[in-house]
Length: 260
Image 1: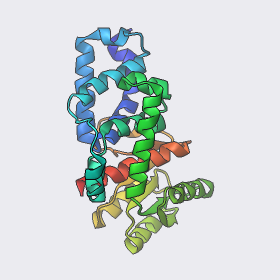
Image 2: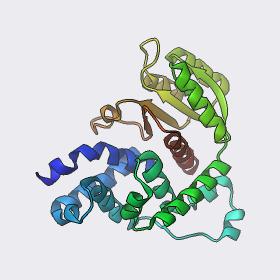
Image 3: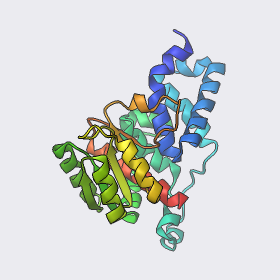
Image 4: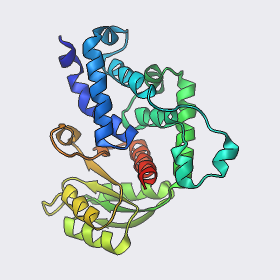
């Protein structure tokens, strides 16, 4: 099997991960392209004893790590920073460990193989990332979801993270009206809504009024990650795990704070 065919099934998920890690479709895709170019030139990286998926993510991290600062920061300095400054100073390694396990579904051992850490090191990085992100970024969240049970689950998760729920909308029109009334700090949007409308269209309408991070929820993430059009940076796959929602919320708020 050719290199391209070996890694092709995993590319939509690497794109999702890269975009969440960098906070940008453009930047994330650029790192993925660089990874593919490297693998096509050096096919030996895919026969390193790792599964094709692990080898692909490992190759991505070799490139990513060469361009970011993974050093630790003095706690005295962090205590003097504003929340946004503190989050900007959060070591990338902590975010990487959190995303690889909570969003991409790797075990601590697998994430360690990708990052060059042991399992306890991965667990420590995850706890540090969760603590820093959750403590600094409490906000109000608009949930756009037409299935009542899923909406209740999302509300509970949001509240567990210390956020408030601005409201729950089941249609595009309801979502836009609620957003204008409550000015949420984050939007969680299902893609297909009760009246046949789209959560993507609802988010587009909301973003015309004010800037807010949006996380989309879909059972078919590969359909939104074709690389052929502007695409969302944050996607949660149905059925979702609580850890996935929590990690993605943290990342969306983190990068929105950095950009702001």
